[in-house]
Amino acid sequence: MSPPQPSGRKRLGLVLQEAGLITPAQLEVAVNNQQHFDYLIGEVIVLHGWLTKDTIEFFVNQWFDLIYRSNPMPLGHYLQMADLLNQCQIDQILQEQKVLGLRFGATAVLLGLLKQETVDYFIAHLKGDMASQSAFSAHELAKGCADRVRPIKTTRAEPKRQKHRRSASGNPKGREEKKHRRVRTAKQKSATASSAEVSGSLPENFDIFINDEENFDLANVLEMDDGNFSL
Image 1 (tube, rainbow, N blue to C red):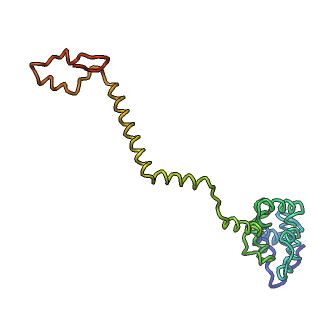
Image 2 (image 1 turned 180 degrees about the horizontal axis):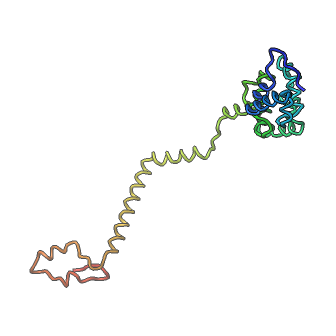
């Protein structure tokens, strides 16, 4: 299936491994099988079901020509040529790409249709101008830049409330009125607490009667009228 590789070209197995299409362990197995059963390495890989015959033939017959020339076609075109994506999968990627705003390769990886290694390998060898670009599409990058420089709008109600608070706190008359209200409130609380005292409380001048032994009369001191002491 696979003709001998011309000098100067990488071996097929190494190319497939670098592209993330087979693992190092699979390559080792393929090399051992090739030596024991006299198969070409591409044939061994196909027999194991790791890649399709069309993929092997693409890398054998077309890959080395493509990497040495300009490739103006979209990335999906070459992935379809390699039998790594079919038309249905490409349509799915394009549809999701509109929603996610990602580039074709990034969307394919996100959907689990390709490995990141495979996308990177194709871009590096076929679309070198894309190698250093972001995974986001140019449209989404431009949109993101516009969002970052867009000024933040503030409502008119917020400054008005702040202005009102500043005028209230900066008015001397307003501060004086607040002070009077606090004093009146404290007096009202004090009067309420005094009226709620126990009826057996003694008057403030009780000590006068205690010191005046001749005129002291406890019955007169404790005589009450509606909860108020009287003499």
